[in-house]
Image (cartoon, rainbow, N blue to C red):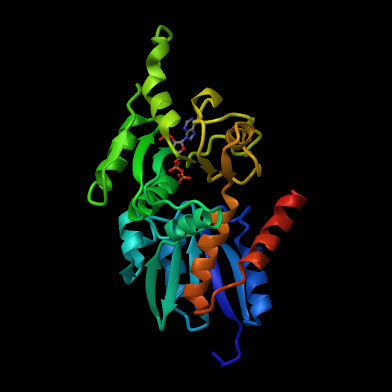
Length: 296
Ligand code: ATR
């Protein structure tokens, strides 16, 4: 490789269609005058090993990893960060002279997003909705920052499994409800969820409920408006649409709100700094992402 060859960063994904990361990162490279290019790479699961090998090439700075490869790449990296180990997923790979380092910047990105909104996590009473991959990163971020956590998920067992996996970092109260709700279920079935939600100072939606995808009606909320607290903050990882029903109802009740775009931008900013050793201009990244979202 010549000293002036364009550096590469890849997004390993399947499918690779809708990501905002290429425009965000390429805009950030451009303003810093870094000769690098970020590109989405559609990698089939059976081609993952070969793709990982390609990341060791000298011109490759690293990669992002997304659905469905975030767990699958873990055996192929040479080293895992503490966050990646706890979260059980890698979203960022750094190519350090042919050695692949696996990181997870979702948690740091989420904490930064909340800080930007003026929310100090320490001491918050948090209700987390959902127990999937995104929940794991957010739970890790919140526990590390010293919040008290309650967790609710449609499939209760997954909430218990997540709480158990993170027990070394802190206690999580799991809100139990049956997964299959019978027609003759009592009216007070969700009392515990309502009670916890009403007392929460921060509510986080990590589920895909409210997301616009595949023609499914996005005007649904993972939490009834009546359960929202009198004061506090509601954060939603969804950013398509920009304002979910949950955030709209929270704002109508005077609560602070934030959608998922700041988390996306700041996880990207954390990754960018790992690849280039330079912090990107996050305003440039926001503008690039918003440009795409507004054109949709
Ligand atoms: P991600 O990596 O984005 O978190 P995931 O691991 O598939 O994706 O998790 C999706 C989360 O959204 C889960 O908590 C899921 O609940 P279940 O564990 O019960 O499947 C939640 N979710 C998705 N669709 C939902 C719906 N219609 N109602 C309630 N929760 C839903």
